[in-house]
Image (cartoon, rainbow, N blue to C red; front, side, top):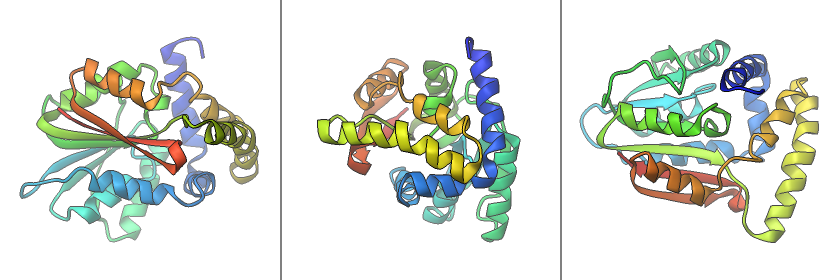
Length: 235
């Protein structure tokens, strides 16, 4: 992947391939904690108003979008993803659960198909490592959210404490690709995903980048023994 176009095409194709076992791999890799983190991401929005409009960006199979719909029954949630098979899976899941999310759209995080300042809040989970231009993706998020609205980003990070850092490295770079090969049958995908973290900014660096593109009141919480970061910011 030598260009941003190469990375975008690779990521889109990869997530389209692994959709069938995507939820199972998330549960296995996080020891079942990913659902709790997604629910926490939804709750951190603290949505007010009669009918807030929320964008769940890179929705995958829709778990954060569904968590938002359950936490804020009056909200209208739009679930957007780059990969059509992921979006189809999210729509199927919502239908099986009584259709708490009804609005789905295919789109690119670097060129969101929405006007400026239309959303009251925006979420994303496990998106940021996979975009071809992180700063542009953050700028697009800020563009489509109303002034005063919130953005919540859930993403893997590298633990700082030496004992957890070393254990995480062994697990994430050594064991996860092997588990991915067995569970998903796609060794390439679960070799790429750990290495997508190698040059990704640490949580504090990501906070600084968010400030630089114009977000305010940026803060983050470390979860999962420091291996996960939930960033919250105001537009």
